[in-house]
Image (cartoon, rainbow over all chains, first blue to last red; front, side, top):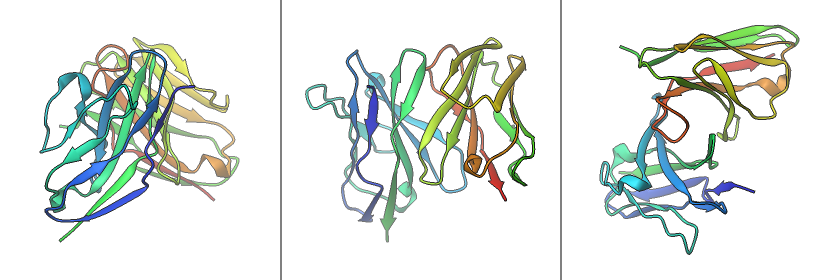
Length: 107
Length: 113
């Protein structure tokens, strides 16, 4: 069955520390993966997609098919990165979201 | 200039009532979605419509009935509300089918008393 797993419900780091939000997926086909972010009192928005291979707000994510992972990384966390992050897998017809990880960046 | 707007933002009602949530997008997208976010923040798709046609119905109770009068609107009507329906409901839209960047509304927080 197709599934997206984000093992950490909450990740708390200090400002300037590296951040890695974990995402693992289960899918037999060719995966297409995304990260969405929801800042406090704002709507959910697309952060990045693996096919773009881009860096947004300092975040990057690399698809590792061998480990079936799509972890989100940032070398130096900022307080404004505090938000809820969702990993999502596209399969024909729909997006499957992970459970979400709350990132808390402390000053 | 809101891209995807939902009304109402908050909805508090009694068990057994019938209620509707409206969604409109002004992005010219042809696909719209409803998601449910439960108390644990788990986000799950309920329905998707493409050009007013139902594409996905994710084993949602038939008390939930989406209606798409045109491409820019996807309303959600819920009959006989139950306690378990308490959640935040998000509307979203995208151009083309799933996989294109989805634009989300602010959500409607439904609380059943």
